[in-house]
Image 1 (cartoon, each protein chain N blue to C red):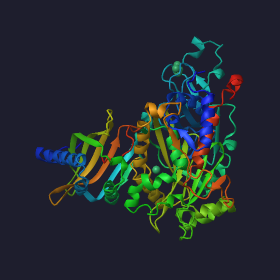
Image 2 (image 1 turned 120 degrees about the vertical axis):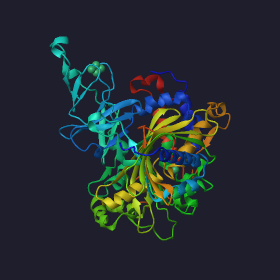
Image 3 (image 1 turned 90 degrees about the horizontal axis):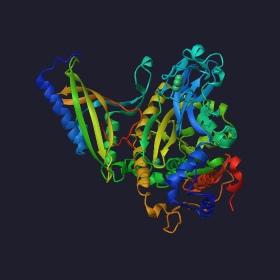
Image 4 (image 1 turned 30 degrees about the vertical axis):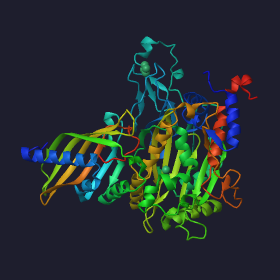
Amino acid sequence: MLKHSVDNRIFQGLREKMEQGLLPQWIFTDPHIYELELERIFARTWQFLAHESELPEPGSYVTRWMVDDPVLLVRTNSGEIKAFLNSCPHRGTQLCTADFGKKKAFTCPYHGWTFNLDGDLIGVVAGDKVYGEEMKKDEWGLRPIPRVERYQGMIFGNLDPAAMPLDDYLGDMKWYMDIILGRSDGGMEVRGLPQRWVVHANWKVGLENFAGDPYHVQTTHRSTVELGISPQDPLYAGYGHQVVLQNGHGINVITATAPGKPQRPPYQGLPQEMWPMFERNLNADQLKVFAKTTVFVGSIYPNLSFNSPVHGSEGHLHNYLNVRLWRPLGPEKIEIWSWFLIDKAASEAYKEAAYKGYVGSFGPSGTLEQDDTEIWARIVHASKGHMARSKDLSYNNLLNYLMGLERVLPDETFPGPGVAYPTCYLDAIHRATHEYWLELMSKEEESAGENGCES
Amino acid sequence: MKTAVNPELQFHITNFLHYEAFLLDSRRFTEWLDLLADDIVYRMPLRATRERKDGATIVEDMTFFEESKTSLTTRVNRLGTTSAWAEDPPPRTRHFVSNILVESGFPNDALTVRSCFLCKRSRAGEIEAEEIFGERVDVLRNVDGQWKIAARTIYPDQAVLGVKNLSMFL
Ligand code: FES
Ligand SMILES: [Fe+2]
């Protein structure tokens, strides 16, 4: 157990500040906070591993990371998906170094132990001669990731065997995932591989940006307004509902249309041939929300975000799903993983147009994406000093999470679950997300509980 | 490999690619666009780490760039707005282009040209420079005595890019 310069009294103080809509700048880049996050957040919460379409057949595998834990995800001969620590149990060598592929068995390059798709140790070089009969092979299989569960094709892992089930963890987010991922017959599919790149930013900034920050769109992405790609109305990304969900999750259901103005094309401009599928796969309330929405953008705590936008012009609209993983590489660094997903049921021409729209806008070269990472890096750059980092809060290093606090009330008429506010220019999700952060961060090991109570 | 090109052609092509790099590094993007054919196909697929038996390490299905002249023009126009933050203040780039191999054999005065690239980028007061490197395969077409880039495929060597964005052209 690490000894930390941040103890639970600090979190109690932060909780009081958060209630006033304030959060200190140092929580984003403080190295001690980061160490504690690895232990109390990333070792206990559900982290995204892959979409099931990335593992199309028995023997398909991908390698992934849960922060610093290497993960080998395989589809077994029975079609099950299993996740193992991608490290040989003999001496710890990384077992599989490829990003993806297909195999019947995994052989370690160090001493040649071989494991089948179920993780069982099936071959030990000269086993009988060197280890004898006493060697119990069934004790030396690959070490499974303690929990692997999925929802709507999204596979998550958890390092905590006692974690709450994924279903409970996602809670009401599932209702929105049904729309985003489960609306059409056959669900979604990943195209190619995720793009990966490294950015000087803290993982919470990526999380925040997608979870609850439509407010940044009109300034950060003003170049696209200037080009006439995005609407002129500075409030456009604010129209719709910001929905606060359980366990730090949140989603913005953006209509992008001012009240009283003509509605955007229904169902994110998806082709009319697909509408009967939506009616089959969604319930009446989900349809009602989906019909009016232009963009769904949100985050699943701790480090998974998604964006389902609409690009193109009237008659040539397309929608897709961009899934983002913010893999922490340290307090000031993330590796971004960005997947493009599209409805399996869409036509090839539609898929192609949507893919091009994605690469040009939200891929790492995208006209929208470029400016986000530049600005996130500037946060890291400006948060290293004493004034930003001092924990006695005497330099006004409290950042502003005041938007809509006690000013904007929930809209009881919104058909979806969660606490829905009638605007997306709001810090409600950010406050809830950071309150959840505080809850997790101040939770000691369950077994060590006695001296961890707050005063 | 067909390398039956004369030294003069090699010289012209080398100069052309050096001039292109000069335009990019001098932020003369509109002039750069003039070097591109109107039907240019400009792509940058992903690099993946794969086992040898599984085949190519380039994944064509997903790209970092999948561009036409129109979309490249939009990107250039964006740099002319007042709010392209990734490029304002402008970072300094150097495009190093080397190992230029000219392959003839295409019809219609077209050539396949392979080159290696290293693009270094310095931002603000940061001491560490970002970099990206790999191979480019171009198709150059002679249009009325002027070389134009009719196709460019950029193959990065990294499976995980070390640049915070691709706001530059490669
Ligand atoms: S470390 Fe894998 S077989 Fe020895
Ligand atoms: Fe953004």
